[in-house]
Length: 396
Image (tube, rainbow, N blue to C red; front, side, top):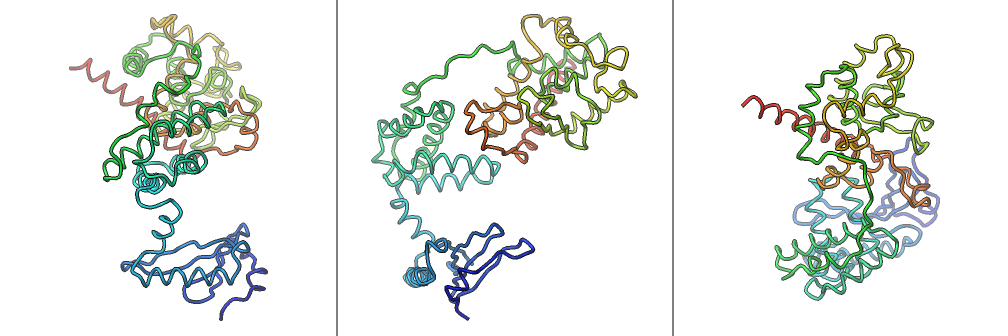
C-alpha cells in the first residue's frame, strides 16, 4: 500500500532501537532512524548491482516531492545512467570539478585510513574548501584561489588545520594529474605563503633516530629494576610523571588504565589503552610492588616513588640536559603526527591535552577511542621494533 502523508508525519522509531522502513512502492521508502530522523531512500539496480540512493529528508521533502524525485531518477536509469553519479555531477560541477575529484580521492583512501580520520578530512573539505572551489575545474584553479581558501582558515587561528588542508588539496591535485584531469599542483607553491606557528620551547626530548640507542641503554640500567620499568611504561603510555607516580592498582581495569579527573592536569577523566607491552611491564611491576596499593611504590611501600626518581635515572644513563621524563611525550607526539596515520585530535586526546578553544573543548566530548586503540598498539610496536633493531646491531 502506498504511504500517506499522515503515516509519514506520525512515523516513530522502533521500540527496540532498530531502523524502521516504510515502503511507498517502486523502490521508494521512508527510513526512520532510532534517533527519530526521517529520510527518503530509493533502491535500484544498475550495472547488475543493487544500490541505494538518498533523495531527501522528510518533511523538508514531502511525500509528493519524493515521488517526483523517484520518477526523475527512474528516467535517468532508463537513459542508461546511474542516478547516484548523475546526482554527484550535478552537485559538484562535473567530472573535472575539484569536489568530484576530491571525493574520488577520499574514496581511494578509505581502506587505508581509520574511519575517524577519513571523516575529519571530508568535513574539512565540506566546511572550508568545497564552498569556495568545489565546482571549479581543477585546471581553472590557480595558487591564488587556493590561498584564498587557506586564508579563511588562518583567520580562525587554526594554523595546523590550514597546513593539513593545503596538504589534502595538494593530494587531490596529484590524484587529478594521475587521472588526466589536472596538469599541475598549484598547492605545492603555497608552502612559504602560509603563516608559521610561533616556536614553542619544549622539554628536552629524543629524536626518532635516538630511541633505539636509549632503549638499549635503559635495558642496561644498573639502578632499581622498577625504575627502569617505570620509565619504559611512561614511554608506552605517554603519561606524565605524576600520573604514573600516583597510579594505583585499582585504576587498572583489564585492557584500560582509568585515571580520574582529580589526578589529571586538566581535571578530566583519562583512559589509557593498555597494549600487550604495557601489560607486560605492569605485570613485572606488580611482582615488585607486592601488596602495595601503588603501581610504583617507594622504599617503604606505603608511598609512591619520589618526584625525582626517574629523572635521576636518566642522569645516571648519561642524559643530563639531553632528556626529561616529560620529553617522552613530545617524542611520541612528534612521531605520531609525522607518521600521517593518526588524526591530530586523537593524538592530543591520548596526551590528555585540552584544546585552547574553550568553546570547542566544551562541545567536543569525543574520546576517539577506536582510533586511539590502534594508535597505541602501533606506538608500542614502534618502540619494540626500535629496541629490537638496536639490540640486534650489538649482536652482529
